[in-house]
Amino acid sequence: MQDIADTSDFTDRQQNQIETHTTNREIINEGEIADILNGYSYPLYFFDYETFAPAIPAFDGYSPYTRMPIQFSLHSIDKKGGQLRHVDYLHEVNSDPSEAVAKHLIEQIDPLGTVLAWNVGFERSVTNELASRLPEYEVPLRRICGQMQDLMDVFSDQHYVHKGFKGRVAIESVMNVLLPEMTYDHLPYTGQDVGFVWWSDIVNTGADPSERPKKVHLLKEYCKQDTFVMVEIFRILNDIKRT
Image: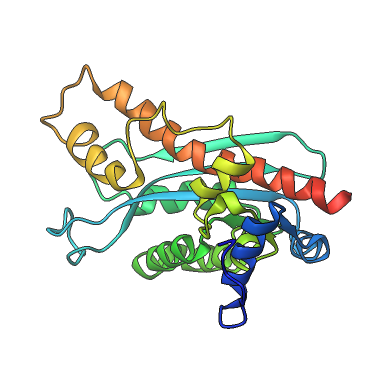
């Protein structure tokens, strides 16, 4: 990158990446970050789903590869400076998880807060699909969709650029730079594994019952890690906003 003399043909995003490498300095637009964070309202909810989308539908009413949320993690902060709270839900029986997930989610999210996700299009679309399948829960689920905002916007909109991101804005890429002490190394699964572990090792009647509690714990810890990372990234951004 140091050998590039003229960057005019590159996109703004590419130019930012080149700049952070050649100057060894971050790009941090404090005003833009403050505007985004000031647009959030308390209580704040940091939210993540895990889903299962099998080729052969597991339950009646589903088409091939239709996503069904099998668990969620929700960290919340009631007010500025408030304590962090965590709740989660993992469906542990061999039945359609949709109604149980919807009911628990609605019970936990107040109408007056902001629901933050990372790459919010996923969480919003899964929630809208839930609302379409469950007309009795449609109104509160659509309301939750309306409360959703994307914490990733700070990074995808180039308000915070670090050469260590290597042009990526996935939560792991940002975490590795801003929170180097945090890791997923203690967790044996990736997001792609979760649905299959749930189906084969937790709700399957042929699963080893002695291994089940351990795998339930690991799935919950994986989902919890995603939302806790968001909390810590938010705190870093909030400290920037106050400087």
